[in-house]
Image 1 (tube, one colour):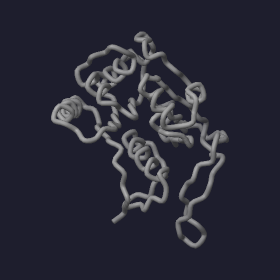
Image 2: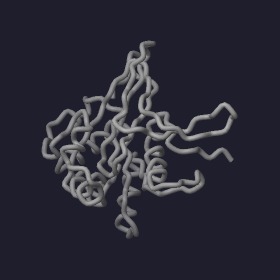
Image 3: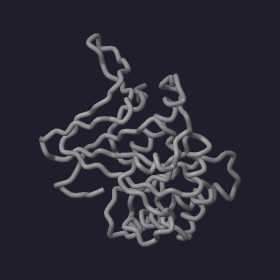
Image 4: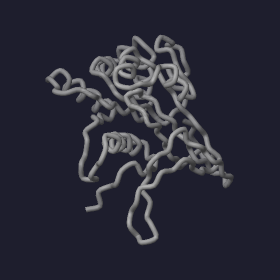
Length: 227
């Protein structure tokens, strides 16, 4: 994502109603211009608003308005991601790839995101397998996903790894410590219940919201704890 005074400062993330383990999401970033652009959502999203009586309520939104937007999405389809999509969703892979602004072949080690000179805000690997985590921890750059993650770390940018595995043995934990020491954020998809989730989607939204928090992207995917 571009940086600097002329580029976006605030933004909103919009997630479609499919399994987030596809490791792909769109970010619409609001710029400094006063111009507004309507964004039609492919599927309605449920947001929390304060009603006239001061009480919070959930409403469906089909459109959002942003100031002069920039839309970025990068997807790297691993074999494991493709299998997860096939086994855990009803979405065909071409339909998932159509959601992305850019789709990279995992073998394309020379893609733009493989270079530190390609500016980004950071990177999220979601879900992150133990194999991928271990390769990133040891800089074993055998494919574009691992190379891009390694570049993110060496450029001191935010790398978030949503590791979905349990239980964990000592070897797993040691690799996580190495990554944390290198600068990565280990963010397992641990469900929370203080916001009283009613559906599986509520649990997923809370994890997605925690990921967005790492990049200071504003959202209202879950109710925050206020004490």
